[in-house]
Image 1 (cartoon, rainbow over the protein chains, first blue to last red):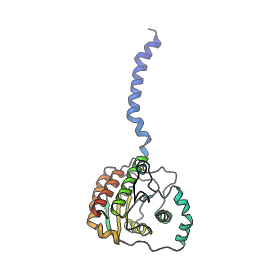
Image 2 (cartoon, rainbow over the protein chains, first blue to last red):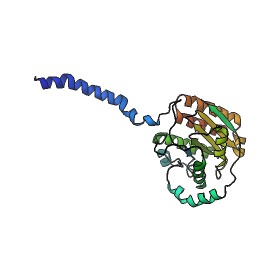
Image 3 (cartoon, each protein chain N blue to C red):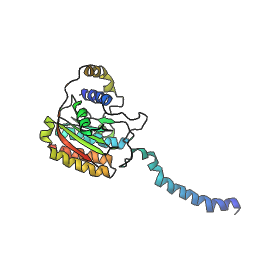
Image 4 (cartoon, rainbow over the protein chains, first blue to last red):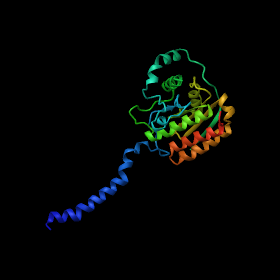
Length: 108
Length: 141
């Protein structure tokens, strides 16, 4: 057994095993680290506002449950583009919205 | 029903301060799917329109939440859940129609459950549980 084989067996194999376990432990969490909320940390994401899916509110299809179809106002979607002229009309004449009468507040 | 999208888009423009646009989405696709399912199912069961806002609420947060709520023009009996993770503030706003079915006591109970999850760092779980509790309290239409 020459020196290259010795190094590969006694250093290479342990290093490979170590790398496999390190990847299994830390690898997956690196990609989703930004979505993890921790109390006390700053919240740097832009505000989002979700409404129930208009069709799904009447009848939920199986496909709707598999894909994120909640309407994010910031994202561009087909209905949003279609209603852009209506949005301009509404902003010109501010309609009377619902009046808040109750609810609850909380801090954590 | 597309008017709801109009309301939300218009509200976002004049709403509280908008964060950096280059930041990623706050929720992963699987978390979004859970939130979407909870929003849709609770709205379908109860006939109320549950709406979720996640972002900064300008001080005073209650007034800001009520301003946001008043922009839900086309929604049928809207209920707004406004969560500001950075400020650790939660606001639930009901209108006249929804308040009859969701008394303040039920909203406070849902808020309590949501706060417990939020303080553990489980934002999605708190939102989903809160929506379920509100839907259960409101009952079927």
